[in-house]
Length: 219
Ligand SMILES: *Cc1c(COP(=O)(O)O)cnc(C)c1O
Image (cartoon, rainbow, N blue to C red; front, side, top):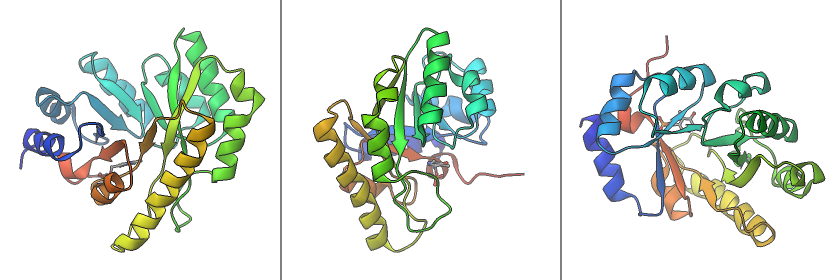
């Protein structure tokens, strides 16, 4: 199927209140434009330089989401335009985002990345560390970042039961936090291989790359 057919398929298949982020990392602008012309407006990237190049060249009504691990010294490059940063994993990073957002006279929405996978290669913080950030005085004083939810990545495995347990873990952290922090609205979980389970577990944002754009070539 073509990129535009894939976009339409996902749009009709996903519940209306679940946002689709088209993960376009490594893909050329022509591919993003095909998705754009099929109505897609939210794109996700994992490298700040690549995202910034695409932001400069593509239509300005695109919403750009940074889904990858973020290095503090690169925050400044995306601060003028980024819409949502999915993988915030420290107060230090949040401080830098706040500082750069302020310089650009805007405020930036963020998600805290919680480590839910068994495998230890994945980034993220514990539920307790996330709560400490939310409750910290430092965060309370930041006027230019809003933590609007949580993000997580399940283990890359065929074991659906395990994936479901990991997504349930994120949903349960979300339910726990949102009693004290009603501004938390989003749960970013689910990729090409596991988005159906993620939606069943309460995802509000799915991040789909290869099953829209095809396999990625890294060279
Ligand atoms: C690449 C990536 C995705 C998309 O993965 P696919 O399996 O191609 O759908 C989702 N989330 C993050 C954080 C990614 O880096």
